[in-house]
Length: 297
Image (cartoon, rainbow, N blue to C red; front, side, top):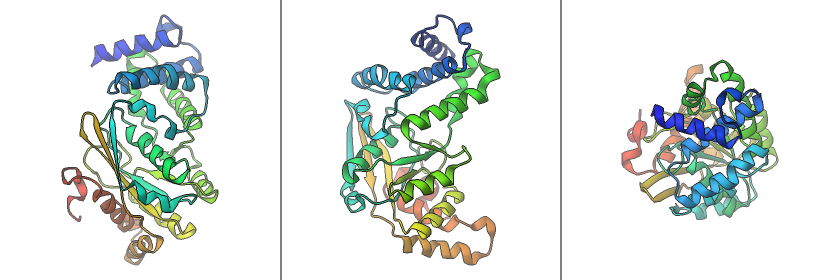
C-alpha cells in the first residue's frame, strides 16, 4: 500500500509540473497535487478508454477550474455495461424538483461511479442536472497527505480542494455552513437534489442518518416534492446496475413524519422518515446488500 501511494505521489508531482514535492509551496499547487494524486488513486478500476478520458479530459478541467456537469462524464465508464432498471419512472419528474436518495456504494470502477451514472440517467429523462449534497470525504486524501509531507496544511488544503470540486461539479458540500440555503434555492428554481443518507461509502446498506430524514420531511412538506430512490450495485466486474423506485409522494413521507412528531422525543425527529425511505431504497437492491435494513429495527 505504502509503495503504491508513494508511486501515485511521484506521478502527481510530475503531472503538476514539479520534480520534487519539496517545491510544492503555493496553496494552489498543493491543491493541484491532491486533486491529481487522489484521482490517480481512485481511477485504477477504469478500463483503458476511461483512464485515457480521465487523464486527458477530466484532470485538465479540474486544474483549469472549468465547470463540468457530472452527467456529462459517462465516457469514464466506456467498456462497462450499465443496466438501468426502472429509468422510465423518471419521465414523470421532467422539469420538476425532487429528491433522489441513493446508497453510497463503493464497489465498482470508481468510488463515485453511481453518482455520475445516476446523474447521466436523470439528465436523459428529466433534462435536469442532479445537484448532489455530499460530505467532504477527507479520508481519501489522508494517505496522500501523509506520504507527501503536507501534514501541517491538511485543513486548508482539503477545504480548498473541496471548494474547487464543488464549484466545478455544482455540488453542495454539507459542511460549508450554507447547506440548507443552497438546497432550498436549488428546489425553488425547480432543480432536483441527490442525497446519500449513509454519509459514507459502504457495500451493504448502513443506517441512514435521522438528520437527513428530518431534512427530507421538511423539504417534502414545504415544497410538496416527491422522493425517488436509486439503488446502485455491481453484478460483476464489467456489469453495473442502477435500479429506480416508484416515487414516494409527499403525503407518504408526511405519514411517516407524523410518527416522529407524536413520539414527542427530539432524538426521534426524522427517524421514521429515514427508515421509510431507506426501506424503499433497500427494495431496489439484491437481498445480500440489505445490511442494516434486512429486517425492521
